[in-house]
Structure formats: structure tokens, C-alpha cells
Image 1 (cartoon, rainbow, N blue to C red):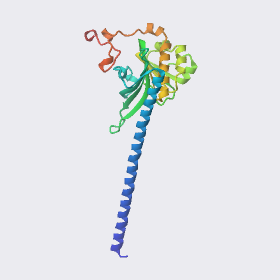
Image 2: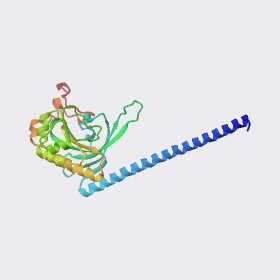
Image 3: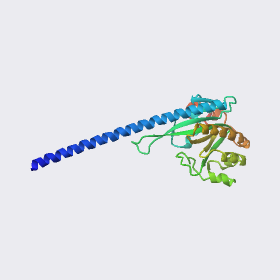
Image 4: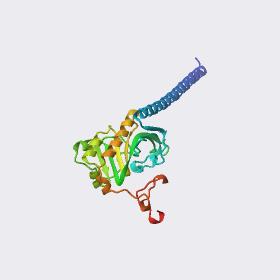
Length: 271
């Protein structure tokens, strides 16, 4: 084989290899696209099945269910301080219409900005239950120890340990007011929290208590709802006398529907 023939042969072989590599890469890309489409379709189907199951369970339990949040104040709960996530929307709301006590379970979707400027934001889904409280209290967070929850530990300060050792082993308590922790976490209240499903974080701020967990199954949503109602019944009455509710008007006017919430006075001129 002459030098020119060898060069042409080598060029043809290289071109064939390049075309093969290109074809192989095309198949890899196509396979990846198909896999993503299948995963997305499976995820949507799973969410629809869960929603339908939750609706049927609520019907059998005599509870009211709404796939879209019908309440104007759910997303404005005073828990923005829990982390750097942006609250997107609430859905799959469960409540008991026969006894309008204000307790609701719902799904919450949040968005967290990426660490890098060119990264994509990440979305997280939670199952939550909110409980209205008859007082205005300081911040309190009770979270499971070792929980891989990226919004946990939002309250700065030392850990507050209580008298019940079983409670201390399971939960990490952070609060801005030690006196409130002692008043709120009575022995009966701690026993009720120990009966909660695993992985649930309890947060209290102003006149709301929030139970939060990574997204749960339909049956567990109802368990969380009932757990929230049980906790409401176990809240010590003494807390209301120590931390009376803030007035709805005047220097501490209610701010639920103003797009934000703050416990700070707004001033006489703005009241």
C-alpha cells in the first residue's frame, strides 16, 4: 500500500469511527429523553392516584377534601422564618366541615434557589397540618433528631432539654423563649408528640402550630390530620394566660391577607 493509499484508508476508517460515535451518542441522547419522559409520566400518574385515594379516604371518613386550596390564608401562615425556601402553592386540602375548628392538612410545594447562580432551583413537597391556637406565642421548633430536613434548625440558639428523657432522645427543641417551651411542652403534650408518626416536625409561631413532613401517603395524610387535632386538644390552657393573643386591630392588627405577616406593631398612625 502506497503512502497516499494508506492516508486515504486511515481517513476513511477515522470517518467511519466518527459516524459510529455520532450514531452511538444520538442513541444515548434519545434513550435519555425517553427515560425522562417515562419518569415524568410515572410521577404525574402517581400524584393523580394519590390524590384520588386521598379524596376517597376523606369521603369515607366524613372529611372535606379540595384538590385546590379554597382558603385565602393557608399560604400566608407565619412560618416564613423556617428556611430560605419560597412557598409556591398549597393543594389537596383536608378539613372537617362539620366542626370548623380551623385544623387543616394540605400539601405544600416550595422552591429553593440554587447555590450557584447558573443552577436550577429545586422544588420540595411536604405534607403539612396547621392548627389555630388561642394565643400569640414566640417561635418554637421541635424536630426529629437526625432528620435530613434542609429547613430544619431555622431558630438560632441553644437546645432546650425537657424533663421527659424519651422526648429528648427523639426530638431537638429550639426556641426563642425558654419559658414558653416549659409552658407549652407539658408532660401530656410531650406524650402526644411522641405518638406522632415518625419524621414530623412541629413548629409554633404566633397563633399557629404547623406539623410538617416530607410528602406522605394518602392514608398518612389523614393520620397527620387527626394527630394535629389531638395536639390541639392537648395544648396547655396556661399558655393562653401567659401569652395572650395579639389584638386583631390597632398596633398588632391582623395581617393575613396583606401578602406578608409580622408580629411587630405597625404603629398607631397605620392602624
